[in-house]
Image (cartoon, rainbow, N blue to C red; front, side):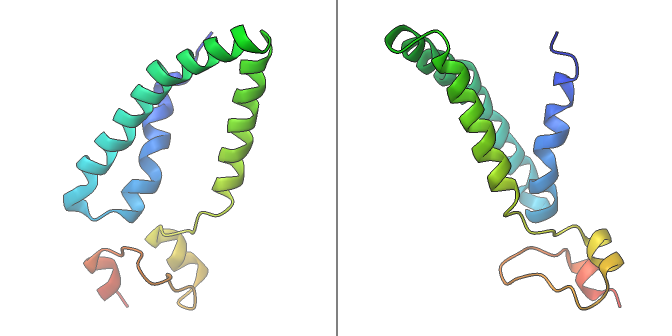
Amino acid sequence: MNRGVGCFPLLMATVPAETVPAGNLARALGLIMGVAEVVGGVIAPTVAGMLGDAVSPAAPFYLCAGGALLAALACLGLIETAPAVLRRRGAGAALPAGNYVPAAEAAAP
C-alpha cells in the first residue's frame, strides 16, 4: 500500500539538481513538485473519472499505462550531466551546448 511514495521528491529532484544553476534550483524544484501536485491530485483523477464513466471502468488504467510508457520513452532521451559520471567516462565526454556545468567543475582539470 503506497510504500515508498515518500521517495518521489528525491527522484523528481535528480534531473533539475544536475541541470539547473544553483541559484534557480529551489524555483525549479518548486515548479516541478507544484505541477505534479496539481496534475496528479486534481486533473488526473477528474480526467480518469470522466474517462471511466464515458468509456469503461478499465479505460483509466489504460491511460495510466500509456502515460507510464511515454515517460519511460522520454527517459531514454535524457543526457547525462552529472559531473562525477562525466569524469568517470573520461575527458572526451563533453556536454552538449546549453547544459549547465558548475563553474568549479568546469575549471577542474
